[in-house]
Every structure is written in C-alpha cells, then in structure tokens.
Image (cartoon, rainbow, N blue to C red; front, side, top):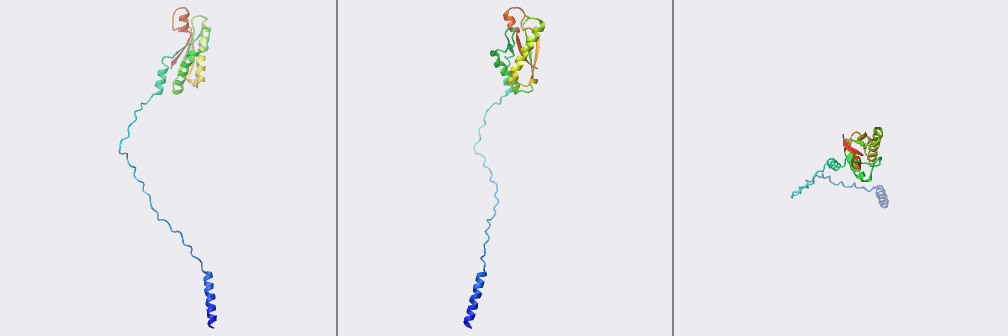
Length: 174
C-alpha cells in the first residue's frame, strides 16, 4: 500500500510538472525621461561685421549704356556692324535686367535719297537693332523701332563725315 501511495504521488508530481508553464517575464520598460532643450551658449566674442556694399545692378547697367546710345551704319545699308554688337549686348543686358524699361529705336538716314526711301531705310536699320536685341532675349514690348528717315539729322551740311553721323539708330529710353 505504501508503494502505491509513492507511485500515486510520483504520478501526480509528474503530471503537475508536465502542466507547469514557464512564466515569461515582460521586458522592463526604461523609465521615460523628458529631454529639455539646452540653452544655446552665446559666443563670448562679438562676431565681426562684414562690410559688403550693396550694388544696384540696374543703375550699373544704365551707367554702362549711357555712352552707347548711337549705332552707325554704312551707306545704303542696314547691316549692324560688328563694332556695335557690344553696345547692343549691353542694352540687351540692361533691358533683360529691368523688365519695365522700354526704349525706342529711332532709325535715321543721311539726306541722300528720296523721303520715302530714307524712311524705309531708317525703319530697316531700327528693325535690325531690334532683331539683335530680340536674339539676346529682350521682349518685343520693350523696344519699338521707328523711323525718321532724313528728317532729324544729327549734323547739318554735306560731305561723307556729316552723312556718316546721320546714318544711325539712336536708342532712347521711354
């Protein structure tokens, strides 16, 4: 009988041991610590101020073209000479910088030729300068070609020196 109790106790212990579960421990949560912003330390030495002057590009460009307002042409021609392309480029830079600026391109001719012919030649000269400006990105509304033909000469008189001064396009601000 005694052995029977031991055997029964051993079976009960084995059953209890088989049904037991291992307890999983939950991870320990780390304590939450709120971070407070640390104050930024001010430099102890003063920062040197930079002395950079402001530049008014519009005024600089206007100044750059002040003495480049006349483009001269050969006799009976409306081809822009290479020597005046830099002047036209300077005007284009200015007009591209100052989009509200408008100019008139006043074409002129010397006194030789008929009135109608000189009006047409002056117009073609003004349009040739306009085309150069357009190639540089100037908007069509910023420049207006007009012709005065031989009606407003720069110089009075006759001779090649006088006529050469009258074959021109003047770039005037509006």
